[in-house]
Structures are given as C-alpha cells and as structure tokens.
Length: 114
Image 1 (cartoon, helix red, strand yellow):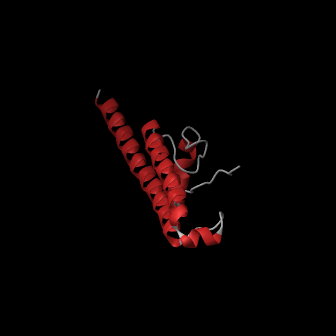
Image 2 (tube, rainbow, N blue to C red):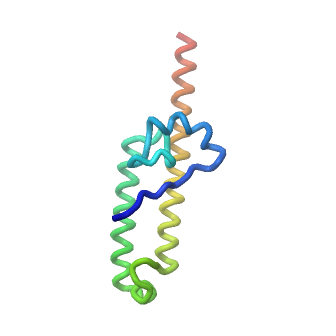
Image 3 (cartoon, rainbow, N blue to C red):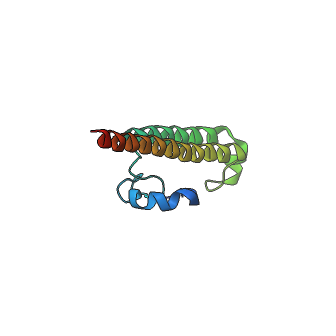
C-alpha cells in the first residue's frame, strides 16, 4: 500500500491557491493544483507517471546499484528521474494556473465591455 504524496506549491502561491484548491485537485491532493488543473493536465501526468514507474522497474532489472540496495533505495539515476517528474509537475501546475488566470482576466474584461 502506498501513501499519497503531497507536492506543495511554493509559499508565494499557497495563499492565492487556497480557495481554488478546494475545487480542483490532483487525485484528491489539493496541495498540487487548484481549479486550473484540467482533466488534460491530469491525463498527461498519468501518462508520465506510468512511464516513469515502468522505466524504474526496467532500470532496476539491469542496474547493479539498485539490485544491491533493495526495493526501498534507488540509484542516483532513478532519483534524478523522480526529481524531473516532480519538477515537471510543478511547472505544469504553474503554466496551467497562468493560462487559467489569463482566461479569467479575459472573461472579466469581456464582461465589462458588454
């Protein structure tokens, strides 16, 4: 059984994301994204996580360092791959948030002009 892992937003974004994060989550994890996290974002993330996990299992079959260390410890290459995935998640969340806020701004401006 695995425990959910929270990937916190930077402190700067937490306050502005608090209200929105109640509406939008990543697999029930409101720390990752708010209402701006779309089904497309989640689908892309699901594909990347699947590829990462599959790659780690394949890697472990051929990596002497991983084989010696057991199932709870990985070599530096695997650690880097996981770090890259977490970086991608953070960047995707920031980009989706920027797109969401730009769309909200456009909608407000269009409403004022009408």
